[in-house]
Length: 467
Image 1 (cartoon, rainbow, N blue to C red):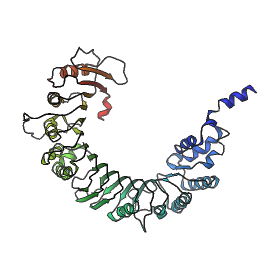
Image 2: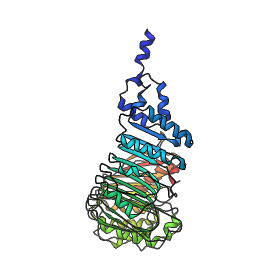
Image 3: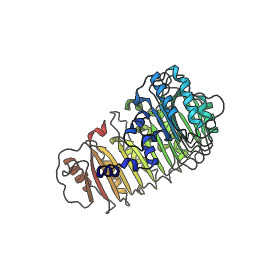
Image 4: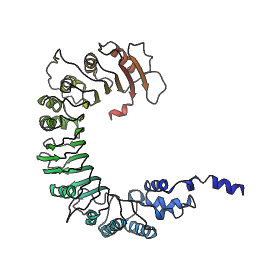
C-alpha cells in the first residue's frame, strides 16, 4: 500500500497539464510519441488526442511503403479533435507517395490546421510538385515550405497567414505576387531561392519583417537580376545575396528601423572579384535607408564599404555592425564620419584576404567627434586593430563601455593596475587572464582617451571561432 502511494506520488509525468505534454510531443517524431504510452497510464491514449502531429521521416527512416502504412494508421487512431500543427519531413519521396501526401494535407486542412511544415518533400533541383490543396487552406497562420520549382494554379487563400518561410529551387515574380496578394495578414516573410536572373517584386502593406537570400546557380552567376521592395510598414529587413550584379530597389520602406545587408561568398577571393559591382549594389541601397536606426553591413569587401562615401550622412542611425579586416580601419573611420549620432558600434573579425588596395592617408577634421557610448569588438590575436581602437578612445568623449573579445589567447599572466575599470572575463576557465589579455590591457592603458569613466570588458574566445 505504501509502495503504491509512493509510486503515485512520484508519477510526475501524469501531473503535467495536457498543454505541456502536447508541446513535448511536438518536439518528437510520431514514432517516439507513440512509444511514450509506456511512461504513464495517463499517457496511454493521450497521443491520440494531441493537436500536434509530427511525421519526421528523417528520424524514422522508413521506406515509402512503411511510411505510408505508419502515417495512415496513426491518423486512423487519432481522435480527430483539432489539428493545430502538422509537420511532414522526408529526405526523399517516391512518386508513389505523391497522392498520399496530398491526402494527409487535406486531412490537416479539414481539421483546421494552423501551423504547417512541409520540408524536403522534393529536391530543390527538381521540377516536382507542391500539393495545390495547400494554397486553399484558409486556416493557416504559419507555413514552412521547402520545395523545388514553385508553381501555383488558381488563387492563394491564406487569409489568416502571419508567418511564411519559403525555400525554393526556383520562383518567379508571378508566383510571389500570387502568394502576397492572397496573404493579406502576412507579417513575417522569409524567402530563400536560387537566382536565375529576372525580376522579382515584393509588395505588401502588412509585412513587418522580410528576409531574402538569393543563391547562385551555375551558369547564371553574371546575369543581372532586379529586386524591388515596396513595403511601407516594414520594420526589419535582411538582404543576402552572392551575385553582386543584383539591382535592389527599395521603393517604400518608410517604417524601416532595422536593416541587414549581407554579401554571401564561397571565399574571400570571390568578394575581391566582385569588388566594383558589390560597391555599386551597396550604393544603390544605402540612400533609401538613411532613416533607419539600426544597420548591419556583413561580409562586404573594402571597396564595398568605400561605396558609403558616395552617399550623404545617416543622421538617424544609432547602432551599426560591420565586419572588416584590420587594414580596413581607415575606411571604417571614414564610414563613421557618416553617422553623426551613432551610439553603438559592433566590429567583427573578418579573415585577411591578402588583397590590400591603397587607401589614402587618414586626415580627420578638427570637428570630428564620435557620439559612441558602447563598442563591441571581436578580433583575432595577431591582427592590429589598435589604430582603430585608439581613434575611438581619442574621439569618443561619451564612451561608457568597450567589450573586447580576443580570439586565440594563450598562457595566463596577472594584469597590472589600470586607470580604466577592467573586468577581465575568462570563458570556461577559472584561471587568471592570459598573456594576450594582459598585453592587450597594457596597450589600451597607454592610449589617449577622452572619456575617463569607460569600462572595458576583456574576454577570451576559443580559436574555433575562426574556423
